[in-house]
Length: 564
Image (cartoon, rainbow, N blue to C red; front, top):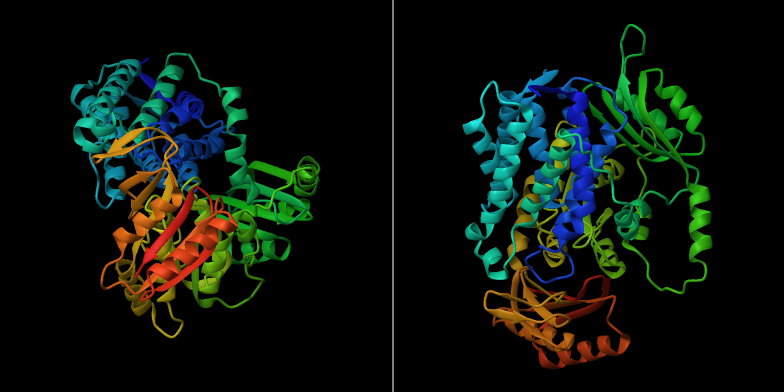
């Protein structure tokens, strides 16, 4: 075919999302580091599912509208660096399709070049040998070869073929990929998306694999659990505003205040004439009747949280577990501000995982904990929800993970004209803790920003976790199930049979003559006996250093270490 419209492109996008959904564990397995947190595939999958959800019930025939709505859905659901970059690729594609109802091969090529350009601009220091390289080389190849008379099928075949070849070349651009013998995971995820889109283009739409649904239910539930603290009805809807000749003029602040008086856990996001609402309420009918004064619904979802809660209690009542999820701590954070409550001057938001780590941040007067970390990166929407709830003029965000910074910055951009959001680029929990210590209500925004950012370099971070596969990284041999001592997130210094031996060697590598404070957070796998052993050893061995050893109860990492 020489042209495609929105209906066809919608089918392609959903098929691409489904193909990634069916194969994301394969993408996760490409994680270079042998740690149990390889979540590139999961992050891209959750991001794509968010976009697919937004367009699944759309009947638009023009390609720009479909792509714009899909892009908006990706933005709200973007998780991790790979998810944010994916959202930016499709944002650029949408910009390249602006005001178009149909496109030919040449116009489609221009849209993918636009996607490449926007994605590169979103990353401060683009790294080649990644998803960025794959979209760049694939879109450039298509741009060089496309002709006005070329069919869409021919054009997409060129794009996909070059994407696959580019993916094969990624180990030549990133030495660590070559050393481990894998291709880039983000690039692999993008190829899966393009493969699914290409299948739909040829009339072979890809459905979700039900087996994958069962396998991933636990992971998906982590995200879902955040929704259900209060009982009543979880009400979500997307509404198109106007026209003004028929509907009332929409004023977001007033609309938000009214909805807030009828419920809680409120999130209102507006993009042009589209308003997306999430609210927990006992009377969803009242909410919907009021909202319809301003526009017409595109999509409505209402879930009875009381029934869901009762079902969960019934299913879990025979289980004996002492685990308390970080999501439970998150749910204890303050709800959206009551009507007419004045804005606070400052608020702090931190990403955290582990009951003890949450408590540490609470001691440092962090206002809101965003649940997540290595195994479940928060989405842009998670940060938007947090910013909405803290009700402050100036909001400092501590991502505490290098893979979360982009999502936090994306939330900042969404609210640029409403809230002054400052993202402190903390890449570890310890950096976040020290940065929070340097915040003061007595200082102005600029001074706090400078002090908190400068504090990041005052702490050396490390962690101990187990290896999920045999590997060799930068000359260090690692065997499955051994415990790795890791400096600054990526530098594996050694691997041991004992987690405590790994901790001792890690601390030894971090401490020097200038060190004065040692902080160790023990994970959820550490027994009381092991905790006492660690506490006794380090207090005796490093008598000239202030040792703060506490239970963090974090998953994945047996120990998180900071040296100041």
